[in-house]
Length: 331
Image (cartoon, rainbow, N blue to C red; front, side):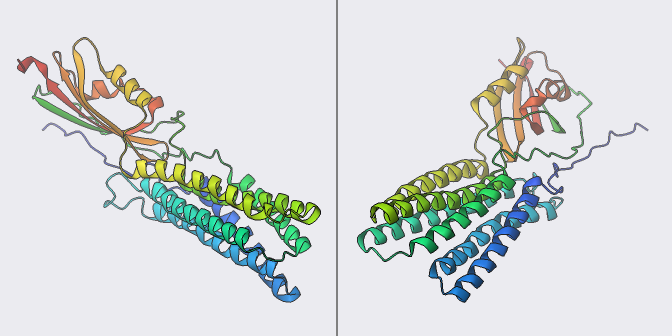
């Protein structure tokens, strides 16, 4: 009796491992919560509305970061759930998308508050306000260093190959492949969930910087208008960040085609004098990991396994489905 080849269909792609971004986010949440308690306590004790307000702002900041942490934990805990066809990698993009919506809301609140202050100036306790802004800048600066903008989370885990080793010369042939690559991947496949957390912290740091500059201008030169104007400028910048993150995360969620250079590289690797790619789709299924389907029309058909090995590992395609169409039967 012929022994049938064994096939392994693992779609975890390393999502069951704790990511560096998760650890970083939890550390930043802890720092933010400690500062929140300190500021609210000090504000209540010394009667400082500036400290109280910033402490409450820290609470909303913690909530946004908590969404990032929940996305990481959910993806890791459910990585082996078979209901997720290609693993839980897209939870990362969903967390980033949610964070981007909150960031957009934060920008609108900044804009509203700044216009209100411009039209209805209020008395400012400069020393307290500057002190709080400096504290906020220090905390957010430390948080930015911890999170690090360029963490891409390319931990793919160990995929298992399941090759279609038998060539039967049918009109259609399919092969499903899972690979583990340790090569560099396109820069656009970043950890979007961590990017969201980083932008929240950076937006907070920006408000601290603009507040310090504006408060110093108002205190020493009487430029009361400078505080709301700087707030308006800051809100526009934060809104632009949120739009960029919304665009990139929504593309991942909606299976947007991979960058043109990735598609071109895959097509070039597969095509030859006798082989032509007639249908090709490549899309992201998580940070740094791609899925692909190929249909190849060939006048000299080879096994799907042959074509699979032509795909450059550097592209980061960890799962692919290959269909071979026998061109000898077409007219």
